[in-house]
Image (cartoon, rainbow, N blue to C red; front, side, top):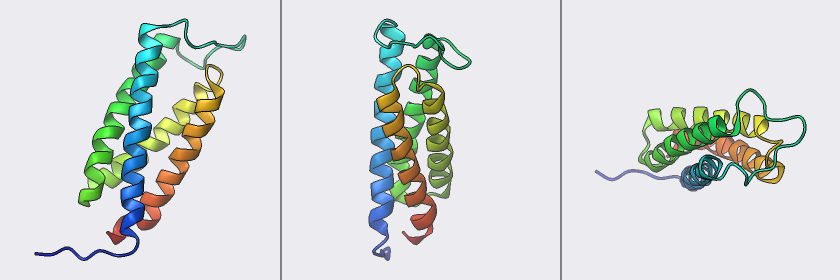
Length: 127
């Protein structure tokens, strides 16, 4: 059985690759926060809600889940589309809360998350 593909399939592949990349960045980001708590400079306003170690675990878990969902996304699984949208939405919120520690990466990650959400929602049913 052959699968029909459309011109929009590339957007799903793009969303999958970006999700895996952002997930891997978050895994690295989380590991750095866990193993070297002096690496990130936190401003006088501090971090929202948690300390740096807790944010390290959050980034590590969200990143690992995003990698798994991103790998499953090109297969056309509905659960993968839903998981990717939820995880990158959660990632955008965690990046917003973590912005005082590393603003440049947080802004880049939020922009990438929005692009992935757009690609998966708008073109997700067309693979």
